[in-house]
Length: 269
Ligand code: PGA
Image 1 (cartoon, rainbow, N blue to C red):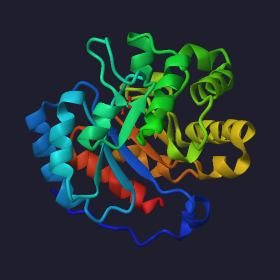
Image 2 (image 1 turned 90 degrees about the horizontal axis):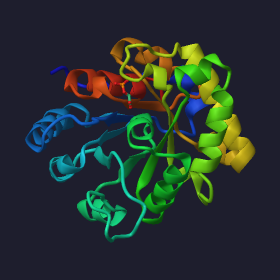
Image 3 (image 1 turned 60 degrees about the vertical axis):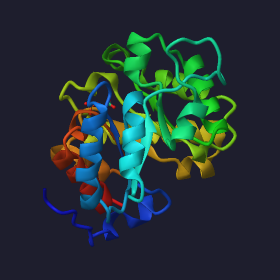
Image 4 (image 1 turned 45 degrees about the vertical axis):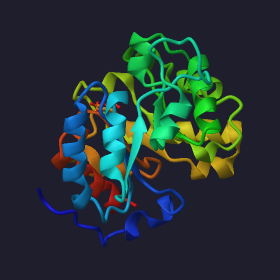
């Protein structure tokens, strides 16, 4: 596989993003077995060791142990794809924050649109999960985004505002979490928001954060884009001033394309 090439051309975006480190986070969804996980991380680690962005892989629960083991001593951070908000107890099939922490997991995806759509997640449960993750020292990647119908009926901002204000209610230090803007119509469909469309929404999200939590903290927040991000469109998306990285599904499953995205994010810092 090609070697990672650090970028030396950062002047252009230095001012905009100086306060925010880019994050490239893979969201594997229901893909890869534990042994495939070990092989993937071993392949990835030497190639991305000089990455200038944060490298995260969010993997299925059963892959976490292998991912953490293989990522030890590397700059790859491991995340889960969900957690339950209760401390422990009679919740068959669920996974607690303490279990994730004990494994050495650092990040957790919360409120992904697939969880909202297929598993009845609501803004209220997103809020409960986010608060529990923060309490235990995990970094939540909280997903927000509108459906096609909501976009077409002009409800994008209203939906985002509700998802953010309800989902993040009671959060004391907003900088301990990451937001991922994922327009539902762009996830796994090959349809990407154009860089201008994505930037417009990212700026709107930053404004909602500023109005709700204060301008200073909003400026520090990392807002990732997700939805068919791939090597072909990453440079243009990541060059936008309010796009601080990506939450990546399909293109995170192959080391080559994931590395290309990490290179793009390092350039855009
Ligand atoms: P995609 O998924 O990159 O395959 O569109 C993104 C996500 O759902 O996080």
